[in-house]
Length: 458
Image 1: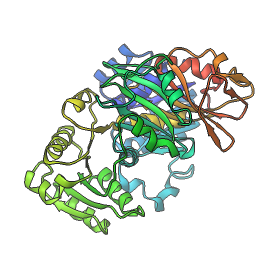
Image 2 (image 1 turned 60 degrees about the vertical axis):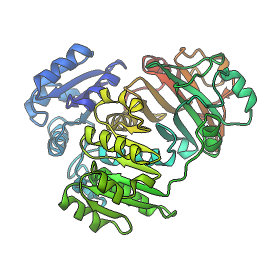
Image 3 (image 1 turned 120 degrees about the vertical axis):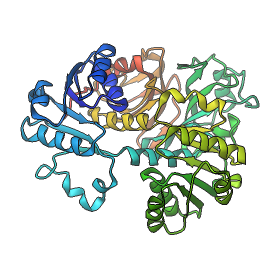
Image 4 (image 1 turned 180 degrees about the vertical axis):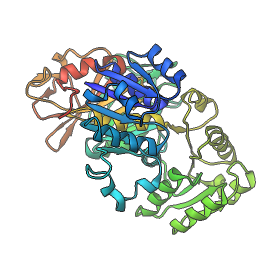
């Protein structure tokens, strides 16, 4: 498939990295020649330097025979015009645009994105995706990563194992025997910066970061087995009243359980804007790094502090100060992936990577047919793929033990009809079953071959 990606920043580069590795013909456009050089040097892509919204630039990138265009520049307006030009002049059949401004995302203006107006097939809002990710983190506060699959029936939990974890030094096979009724399976382990799919005889050690698929009804028990008892969330402090912070506060107000939330915002006008749109949340105007303001916001007694300003360093420092003040949990928004290794050393409990959430969302709309969901793990180290087994698929009608998956691939759950089952070696994958697969990035093409899922669009 021929794909044009507009914008060679963090999101555009990662999308190009994923799609170029899947035998697609990928061209990247950016007006920054250095970013184009970096992309063409590191990836199997073509590069065009120029403004993505200019017809001559799109023509040079091959828009006349492109199947898909992904507009992910830093400008909403450029992304919108790019999709319009791609449609009106080049008849590109599929167009995805990343839009940041909440003014473009209001539901009452949804008719704007139609063929007769602005022909954008899929609108991706990074801020909304990050807000959803933040709420996911708050729903499982003792994890560093969490995502839901199979219509909410299964959760992916990222857990850091501490010295007091009851499951340490025990082979995974033995854990399965000890907790035979537990619908949970460890599919990934990160040890000393290396992520791998574990074997049944592998043991877990302190400071391992593990990824576990757990049935929603068994999440609490799973967390306890791995040394993470469930935590109540009643008092939450949010630092930053931008689109993300405001969206989280509004979502918390809409929950049936009454949560006492306080929102800190440095900019007075933005603080007043947020206060006008919130009913029960207390909005404080001031510096989120101020010890006095954190005290006023009751951060020392908070169950969780969420730092979601536009500045990574502010988020990190605010999280550190909140933990030192006594907050039970600190979750921080990190745009720069090189800062992620600092999280553990600084005692920050969890982080949100906007790039990973946006990349996952875009991939979700790029995959065709029976691939229902995609989630990118870490720095594009692995993917979780939710897919339906086809009658012609090599996995259909076979027991899991007989399927020749690569070493970096594990099945984490299988849905048969409305029932979710824990995958066992003798579990047979039938036509129509939905499988949840953990795959290291290098093994994703082989997984797609086994699923017989074409990357082509309808």
